Image (cartoon, rainbow over all chains, first blue to last red; front, side):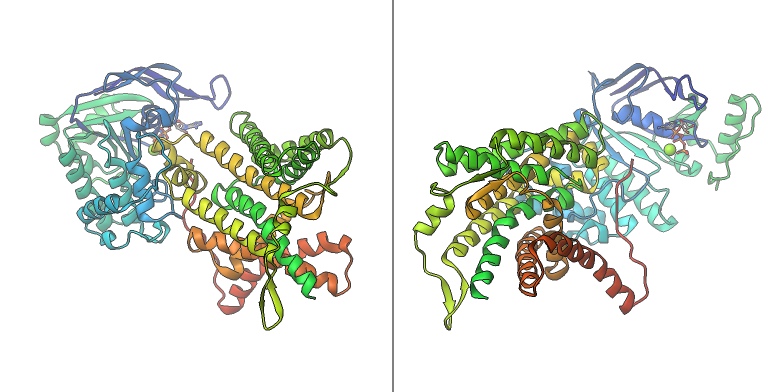
Amino acid sequence: MLKVSQVRKVFNEGTVNEKIALQRIDLHLAPGDFVTVIGSNGAGKSTLMNVISGGIIPDQGQITIDGKEVTKLGEHQRASLIGRVFQDPTAGTAPNMTIEENLAIALGRGAGRRFALGVNKQKRELFREQLRLLDQGLEDRLKTKVGFLSGGQRQALSLLMATFTKPKILLLDEHTAALDPKRAQLIVDLTEKVVEQNKLTTLMVTHNMEQALNMGNRLLMLHNGTIILDIPQEQKKQMSTQDLLRAFEQARGGEAFAEDRYILT
Amino acid sequence: MGFAFNGAIEQGLLFAIMALGVYLTFRILNFPDMTVDGSFALGGALAAKLIIEGTNPLLATLLAMVAGAVAGIFTGVLSTKGKINGLLAGILTMIALYSINLRIMEQANLPLLREDTLYTMVKGWELPDLAIAGTTLLSGEALVFLLLVAVVIALVVWFLHTDFGLDLRATGDNPTMIRSFGANTDGTTIMGLAIANAMVAASGSLVAQYQGFADVGMGIGMIVIGLASVIVGEVLFGSSTILRAAIAVVLGSVVYRLVIMLALQAGLEASDMKLITAVIVIIALTLPNVLKGVWKKTTQTKGGGTHA
Ligand SMILES: Nc1ncnc2c1ncn2[C@@H]1O[C@H](COP(=O)(O)OP(=O)(O)OP(=O)(O)O)[C@@H](O)[C@H]1O
Ligand SMILES: [Mg+2]
């Protein structure tokens, strides 16, 4: 479903600020794979997401989604293949537009932009139905501007919008990190539900090791722009966060996983 | 009073089409488009020239709109493809248009005396004024202008609710998000600037026909007048929905003309009007904050935003 081959990205090449964000990434996701990604700050997780989404064009290598080569395509040209939820709850929605207008944009993804009313009765029904699944009472607030929603509500809406048209790849970049634990759990549950229902091939960055172990069927650890750990389902199921830390140290030849931000419980 | 009052209403309505264009770029697209001064005069200059050469005035107005759209596209391409700062891109187009407008007109001022224009046509209909108890509220011509502006509002509001319109609004609201949903924000920006400047040029050509001449300097300060209308309208009449905001902008344009009329009647010179305009904008921009500070000493936060 997703194939990342020999992808390399260097920022500010040849200057004092040179930074190798991705050294040489090879990654292959089968349809329906739900892969969690962990790694320390600056490991290249977001950069990996960005080269897949088209926000960043890699210096070398190839990216194929559902058999289609997209390496050099702009973000909007491959948007029909990709659903995305960002860390910042305000990033995935248009705050000055209503809930139904935001959903209409999501629904229109890849459909070619037309000069017909964006929201009609039929779509409104569909929106209500889908919003009901979020369990946030948003189905009764179609005409509310998204800017008035809470972070959790916005993130729930972003998730719905990102998956509305069943994209080939779902990219989640720490999409629960900005929420309080209760709301974060809600979004986690919702994520599992949505991914399960739509059989979405998913790549989820998280800083929560427990989340990384409990969710999905495969776990990747990134460090300095390389995948240093790739843990399959069977092994992952039996691991504790302590095991994961040990595995990291081994992979790094003894270097401890120095990361205050990680939630180990 | 009555005569000046009618004039202010009529002007307010004609300039409102320009103000709606400014609303589209500044508010909807979040693009500070300075092309306006140039494209307004471009509309007036081209329409006047074409009418003098015998072109049907309606066709001349439509061609002026096309020219305005091209000016908008030019600014849009400079900013999106050429990566020139949006403010500067507009200023460059505006400056270039000053020379182009002179080329079109071949002189600084083109009188439309004895020419058939859209305005003389409307005059010719001899519509009755709308009067209550002997006071004229709206001249027959103003009624026609009002109808025209209503149609423009309807079109703008409809457009902004189409799929494409939603993309355009999201481009101003959250470009990262709308790109992730497959819209080409370069395209929507260029398209928005084209539509806005077509409206500005239409306004310019109508104003030229209304006042009976085009002048190469007729666009100077237009962007500030447009902004004044938008801001005054929003402050006085609200902007909770697109429809409401569009109506507010039109009313803002009329209020602006009435303020100018009163300023003139109070003895100020026509040459003082740019100063008055600046003062109006400053008051409209600061007054809401000042009032807020008086009511409750809270800081103003703006919801949402864009993220790279
Ligand atoms: N646009 C950019 N220009 C220059 N350097 C960048 C840019 N984007 C990322 N980097 C650098 O590339 C490296 C990888 O960044 P990236 O954002 O992918 O890390 P991350 O794994 O997502 O980290 P975090 O956990 O903090 O989100 C970092 O050193 C970062 O400073
Ligand atoms: Mg990151």
